[in-house]
Length: 132
View (cartoon, rainbow, N blue to C red):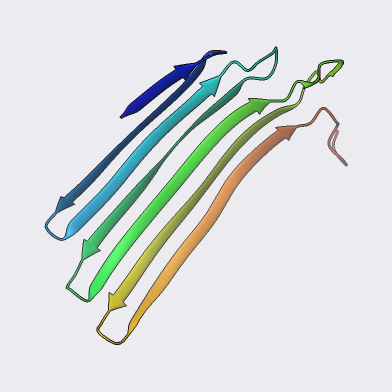
């Protein structure tokens, strides 16, 4: 685990854990970052994590599942001489995968399922096109 702090209310924290029990492996991590920013309306918050789980069916076959998820919120204050009133972002992004793989002396292969997903809410100060 690691925690750091700095100016403008900046904090960074990270924690990870890895485990191997027989044929099972896992790796899990969490992180958090925040700052008040160097001026009004420049704050930033981010938190996320990942998890990876594996299982060795034999010395030749293995399955691995992964999940990675991050959410952040930020504000862009614009130029000091021309500040933005509302320019905010709320974004969540993630990936998930499941892999079945084999490794032999002269050949190897894998079957993979993968998803990249997210939700974005961005207010750039302009009205949405076609919206009310």
